[in-house]
Length: 82
Image 1 (tube, helix red, strand yellow):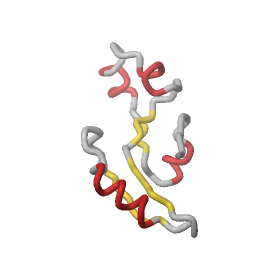
Image 2 (cartoon, helix red, strand yellow):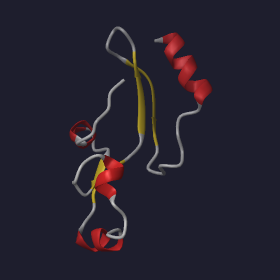
Image 3 (spheres, one colour):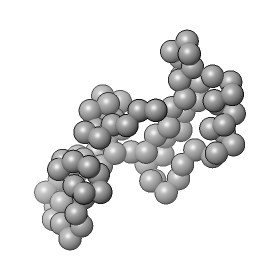
């Protein structure tokens, strides 16, 4: 399990978006630093990767719509096949 609190890994995969000053102002009513765990104005794109013991990616799911996630059945199947 990988948690990327500072978005360093996400940035290396182009899975984070920097929010410019205009968007920052629109979102200033929210405490994003508490929600995201850091003070950066980066918005991560949700992604799930299942990596096998051989180091190869066995399954992946990426969707910029944060409400969409990898289906549990697909995730379980990927773990079984990893």
